[in-house]
Image 1 (cartoon, helix red, strand yellow):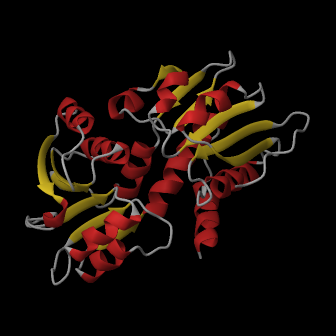
Image 2: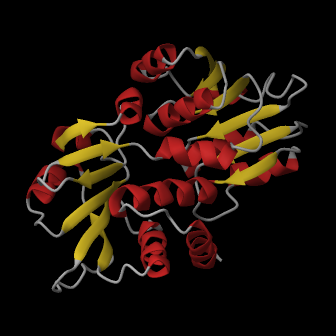
Amino acid sequence: MLTEPVADEGVLNAAVLGSPIGHSLSPVLHRAAYEALGLTQWRYAAHEVDEEAFLPFVAGLDETWRGLSLTMPLKEVAFEVSADVSPMALATGAVNTLVRRATGEWDAHNTDVHGIVAALAGPAAAASATVLGSGATARSAIAALARLGVRHVRLAVRAEARPTTLRMAADLGVEVEQVPLAHWAEATGAGDDGALVVSTLPTGAGSAAAEVLAGRRLHGTLLDVVYADWPTPLARAAAAAGLDVVSGLDMLVHQAGEQVRLMTGRDAPLDAMFAAAHEAVA
């Protein structure tokens, strides 16, 4: 865990919360943005906070705090401290950003959708797509795909898809076809437009999804939201099968850039953030 920012006159604080948190690149990205923007009074830290500790942690923050980035398992409990919720956070049932008002209240946002849209802005032209997983990040993926014009999603899951995910898809006008995760590659990319796949699976489940690609040839694009230990087993298998692979790092930087904008009111210096991200994972 990174150390807390030093209390200093005029300091404004932000941080990423979650459990586990040691792998997070958010401090690298936000600090790079602050440096590029000349925001010398801003500090950004990482704190190990689980669901039980979340409410007391937020309640204990003083007036110097301006924003919080949230990772698992806090994306749903965050609603409990939110005075206002953005339409996208409400639709997806997932909050990954809290921004503090001058009154001390917190506004909830979901910048994951923005990150996925930006990462897929080039290849997303198909009317259908495949999403691996059905949790909070999968909801963000479906919302992003809907924004990009996708109207049919093959949702590949190990058991049953989460009802909240199915309801959200229906509300967005997206037709969902459930398929077992072990068969996710069947019929994927069968159309002329090729495959469009977003994997929201953690590394372990992603490895199982990678095995499905053995001996297959596909064309299209796969975004793996995992960015640590790149390339992941799924990314390697997808590339070997002929898919263009988009790293989760692209999504991460774009969603962090939107957080910077929301918290500071300044447009994010994406070039500086991408440079810091690539240096951190090299």
